[in-house]
Amino acid sequence: MRGLSALTWSAAVLAITGVTQALPRISRQGKYLFDPSGNRFYIKGVAYQPQGQLAETSAANAENGGFPEPSSYVDPLSSSANCTRDIPYLKQLGVNAVRVYSVNPTLNHDACMSALDSAGIYVMLDVSLPLNGSIDRSSPSWSTNLLNEYTTTINIFNKYNNVLAYNIANEVVTTNANTVAAPYVKAAARDIKAYLKGIGAAALVGYSATDGDAAFRNSMAHYMTCGADDVSVDIYGLNNYEWCGDQNLNNSNWGAITAGFSDIPVATYMSEYGCIFSPPRLWTEVAALYSAPVSNVFSGGVAFSYFPTSDGYGMVTFSGTNGSTVQTSADFTRLATQYNATSPPNSPTKSAAPASATIACPTQNSTWLASNTLPPTPNEAVCNCVNDNAFACRVRPATANRPVILGSLLDYTCSLLGSSNSGASCSTIGGNGATGQYGVLSYCSPAIKLNYAFSAYYEFSPIPQSCDFSSNATLSANRPNTAQDAQTAAQSCLAQEPAGGVFTPRPASSSPASSNTASGAGASGSGSAQSSRAAAGRAAEVGRSSLLWAGLGLMGLLGGGAAVLA
Ligand SMILES: *[C@@H]1O[C@H](CO)[C@@H](O)[C@H](O)[C@H]1NC(C)=O
Ligand SMILES: *[C@@H]1O[C@H](CO)[C@@H](O)[C@H](O)[C@H]1NC(C)=O
Ligand SMILES: *[C@@H]1O[C@H](CO)[C@@H](O)[C@H](O)[C@H]1NC(C)=O
Ligand SMILES: *[C@@H]1O[C@H](CO)[C@@H](O)[C@H](O)[C@H]1NC(C)=O
Ligand SMILES: *[C@@H]1O[C@H](CO)[C@@H](O)[C@H](O)[C@H]1NC(C)=O
Ligand SMILES: *[C@@H]1O[C@H](CO)[C@@H](O)[C@H](O)[C@H]1NC(C)=O
Ligand SMILES: *[C@@H]1O[C@H](CO)[C@@H](O)[C@H](O)[C@H]1NC(C)=O
Image (cartoon, rainbow, N blue to C red):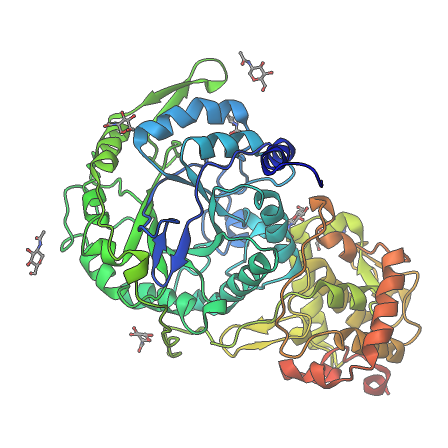
């Protein structure tokens, strides 16, 4: 590139990325957001995600932990025509940000992201996906497949200047009972934050919480923002619909909510708002949100929703061929008027803003169950290594792509192990967000976890019929000869685990298709098995002590070993 002037060089970069760089980076200092001039930045947003199909059946909802949620999605940033159709209306609304809940990293987003950028609109992007693409509150795990899904999306969106934040999850924790899922959510924030730092990305890391009673709402916010800065989210979103119709800070609860969040040391915002239960929506909460005292605590919010939903939200409708014509509603106009009338205080400015504070984590009690010990960083190298070298019995590829069947087989096989006298148990692949104990393979993909359970059962009863599971399983061609060999191989794989189990994740492979369960799907005898083995050999000299960080001895790993059978 020598000889290119700076101008030519930046033109060349633009030509390569196809992205203009109009919007400045927004950064956080302590609890506020700032533009590069040091002025406060407030999110004036609208949710921009067409409704996916709702999981209507109770079986599908069971998979979601009993909570009706979309089971499919349409990527709103993938259609240049739709973005071109919508952006004039987003500008009329006066928004500077959209919240997008689900995108497909295999599609092209250049046109939409660039058009939004030119329109002065940032994107708050959720990196989780429906169903198995999110942390499952009823059986929580922060696992390699989710980490890969998240980093794959981040790798695609990292080139866009106007990504304000990546949301690592939306409403995973919904009740006191599933507060045990919170450590997994926070571990995701920790690892994605480290990942972004590792690739030099400036986007913020966020979580969007369900509303609840004051104890739940405040404990969740404190939990996600307590302790060291590198484990805390940068921006905490509250999905809140408590301001209904012509209310005020007192009778809407927004005054109490603001007071409850006043010591949150990071930026907060209403990641969804706009109650529909006292129609018409007047959007009088907008004036409150963008002035003191709420603006002392919150940095704006995201009105729900631009697109219509089956349960009565939405500000526009579409007609004409391919829905190419937009009709705005009176609701739209009222929100636009309110957004246009805001003039939030530029206070404090960055130079006057307090330095970051640290708050204590909530103490566990009978309603707040989450341990402050977080699960380890998902370690794909360890998972692939044990899978390739220590697991004799593996799930067939066709089954590996069926998350519901994987789940039912895992439950079944773990109960078989539990009721056998094998000495093996699924605690190696399980975890407990209340006690803060996590099995050494608790972060592996569902398919590799199932391979563990299948293989532990097979070690206990090493005859071919023990590796069938109604034709869902098959013996690996390069399986370990004996249970002892399996133990030894697993042990050297686990020796790769860094002390403490927390590290900066490496970028996911550039091809999303290769992201996860494929390696758990029983592709045996591959080159990757060879290199994993070599790595395991090198790592063996690290010794066993790293096994102990999860508080589990080796016998917990593959308890069906020869010694147990003897
Ligand atoms: C979810 O399941 C599908 C198969 O239905 C699979 O292709 C995808 O990789 C899974 N996602 C994650 C994050 O495990
Ligand atoms: C549990 O602790 C939270 C504060 O972290 C508190 O608000 C809540 O009332 C406590 N619950 C019980 C049952 O003591
Ligand atoms: C809310 O309550 C406070 C304290 O009682 C009162 O000073 C204030 O005027 C009330 N605000 C509104 C909008 O009713
Ligand atoms: C409508 O959408 C389809 C599918 O994207 C496309 O083939 C067709 O040309 C569109 N029609 C018009 C009038 O834009
Ligand atoms: C584009 O808009 C049409 C009409 O509203 C909708 O049917 C289609 O799903 C949208 N496509 C995307 C990718 O958002
Ligand atoms: C809001 O402001 C935008 C941009 O200045 C303008 O295009 C739009 O007409 C305004 N809308 C209302 C309802 O005032
Ligand atoms: C796999 O397991 C599921 C669930 O137990 C069962 O319905 C199915 O018949 C099994 N076999 C195959 C080949 O899918």
